[in-house]
Image (cartoon, rainbow, N blue to C red; front, side, top):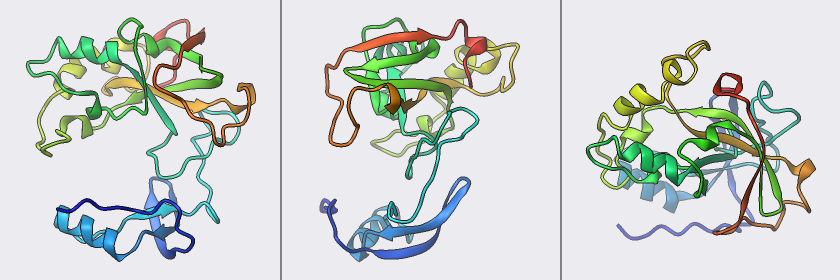
Length: 221
């Protein structure tokens, strides 16, 4: 198939009603017939590509875990997912066939720490931006899907159940049958130097661990 190009600066959009994601429903901006046809042809099922309507809609992070209003668009539940390369390396040592990090889809990838050290991180700073790690990321079955071939397998879930389940990590807490990899993270704009608009994290930015949870039992999950 020919590559699909989507304009990021369109001035006008058609509005599609009744879009839903978890607890949120509302209108969204439609990216047009060309994008719709491209995805429909590729996936073999009618679908449309939509963009969050920032002009009229608001979707907030779960207030049970984050103080104040942290807004998100069409991400699953949090704006950032943080994971370390060392955690993936440790997991791959247990797998017959190693998997790439794209199975877990973090948008903040760090390296230079101990495997799963990020489990205990609470407040961190990347460059001059402050972040709060608010919740261990419970994983669904998506990591079992090869992102290149779309083939669905049993790993890494089977291995993660043995070494990264709630029963193993937090035996005295709830959610014993969930498996965890990575930290759900938000930007702590109140403690950051400068505004976030127009600023970017860059490859190689230093990461500073400001505060840790005393134990996994005290980390949210």
